[in-house]
Length: 162
Image (cartoon, rainbow, N blue to C red; front, side, top):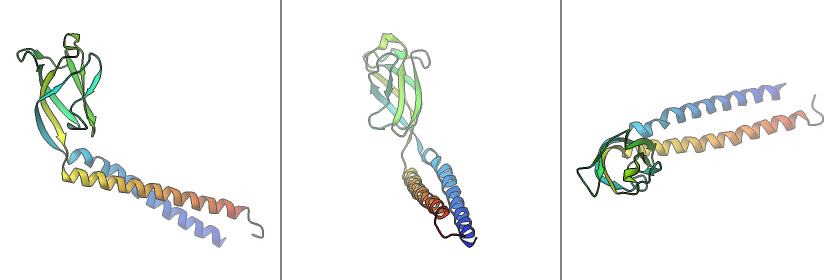
């Protein structure tokens, strides 16, 4: 009976720690976006194909794309494209936003755009690192929980227990 009491105490402690870790991940996960700064990009060139998503910028150069109100044909600067008619954008994530061309007239043509995105900051980098640390710790806690469950199951089948 004393063994069961010890197991209950350790199980409650592990569950409480797991809840704290999961809440920490949920709270800190949003800071990756909150700590970024709204930044302007001007005359960035892309060459999209019709109805195909293209990352705006290379290698996450423009993460969390916010707006692209001004886009025009690079070979004819007076030929402006209209948002939601000729193209639309998706915010994307840390690897960049997405530009989707919907007007086949500009298919495979160079297009220059000006808009805003959420740039990386030092605080955002720290928040991402902390979130990663919490996820690693959470994984370690899952291994500990499995070990405790295994110990409980083995204890149930041991000979000589009253």
